[in-house]
Image (cartoon, rainbow over all chains, first blue to last red; front, side, top):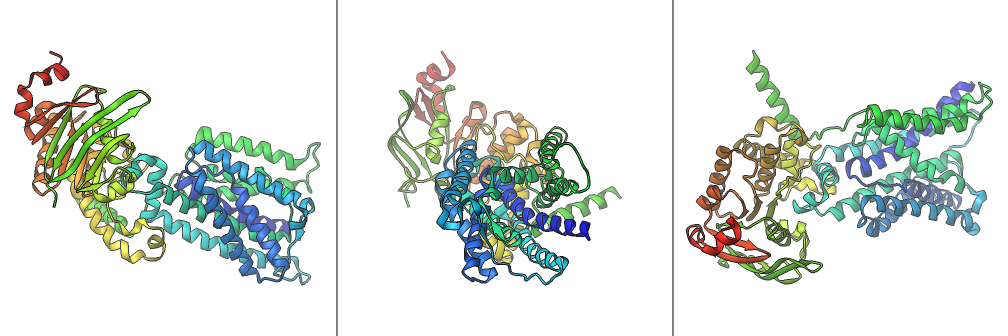
Length: 314
Length: 253
């Protein structure tokens, strides 16, 4: 019974952080935006969900509201921030995340301050934890599937091509008629909406929110997911999310089975460091390399070319 | 319709106290091939960047097709049909050669977020046509067999060719070329200029910076000579060649 509980818990975490990793992959992997404030939008989604669920709003509306409010904040932050150079953008949004966390921490009337606030659950606990977990897995993976579909469609579309072009050389993209501020703001909004959705799912799953859940470290673990998995590859983002969560949850689980003189939860940070150094040294493009753009028309031409080549070699 | 496609009147651009472009006035006609020559650092590329909206002119006015474009953003100037090929290629190196071309296509429906997600049928057909066009242009510059390779794998000369090809892909009304033949072998360089001549007969206008005068002067209809931010000589190529001022500023005699 024990291991099954741990594994089901791990799967929920992979699903939730898979969504966040996909959102960062859209912003950083495709559009080249160094969003070091990912946790801010995760927090907005989680707190929105928590506060709305307490006044009896149905869960799907809570999720949609979390994603929408997060997207609005994404747009507001992006308007001044996207005029900044990449490194300053990173600092600005990092600060934004900390400011938000300190606000919910110190404003006790809002959501219980440091002690946090409970979330009304969707799925009633009927005595079997496994069924409860399966319901959560179902909800999380449905959302993950929708998000994956969106980013995958975008990656293989002319829109995704423009985002990649802006990442490669924004001045050239602008000179080729692409309104870079508009594209960046859109990518930032969409990424923030996805992070907000994941935040709502996180709050729902844990059934409480508190400021300590939204430390800057969350942002960095999501970055590790994308960098290890492979930027600009959506499968890579999912792979990275799975690897990082296996380490993060795995060390917590192992604590119950192995007695060591150190706390294994802290060991995970050493493992993250080692993982990122190894990947950057030996496979800087990430475990999976950047996916090529596959539109229907490009596939047709490519297959046609291959056919010509094969005939020629015969 | 105005006779001039591009009209520049008294345009200056200074960086601190240095006037990179100083009171330049010039005209480019529909279907014209204009050359711009001058020593290094004379302000030619700055003039191009000012036309493109990458710099705002400090003084003077730039008219495109009779409309003032001083305050437009680069992407808006591109929408009007003014397209540039950079001197040092600024390609999207991790994208394939073909994708580089497709980014440049003007009016691609799928460039919009909503269309990319929800109106997929609308741009899939359009993209087929655009790919055909792109492959045709790549054929002219002998890059067709590299279509699916990343642009970063091309040699220096090929990058330059792709930069020019990408400019053509946008179907511009005025194409600014910054040293299109630099680093290209003579035969291909001449071929590029022959292509330019064909396109100018179809109404496309060119403004070309080029140090390879033996090629440029064969094809240009009108030549401007710049020195220290000012136009010092202008005229038909054969007239410029007879002007002593041209020799003084450019050839150093």
